[in-house]
Amino acid sequence: MRLLPDPKIVRRIAGNPRAAENSAGGLGHGAEMAFGVLVFFLIGLAIDYFVGTTPLFMIVMTVFSCVGNFVKMWFGYDTQMKRLEAERAETRRVQPRATEGEQ
Image (cartoon, rainbow, N blue to C red; front, side, top):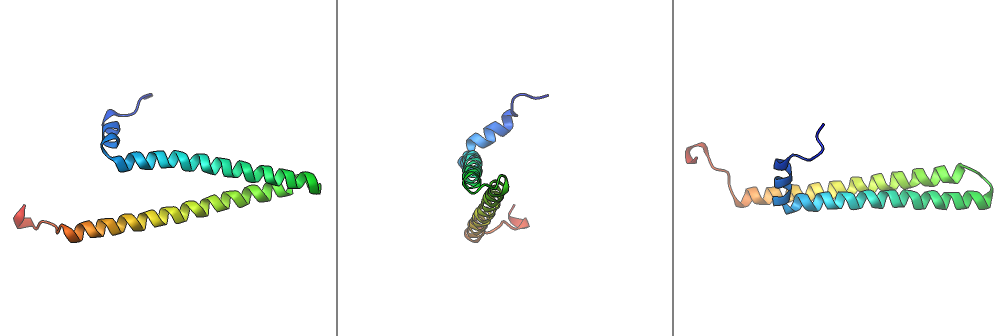
């Protein structure tokens, strides 16, 4: 069982600022999702308390929050991938590949 991460991976991430941004962003997105689900659960709990329907709105609001978080992640991922693909295409356009004879 390994308790510490592989030093090669740590050096690679430390040398790549984009990788560090992505890992920090992932932690922030996870906390945002958890807090959002908690808030919607509590809203559902309050509605259930005042209306008198015990688990109905808690379940509905929690599922609504989870689906909303999934859709938000999906569109965010799709946007980021399109941006990265455009950057890669621009890099390839600016720096043409070396042919076999040039290597």
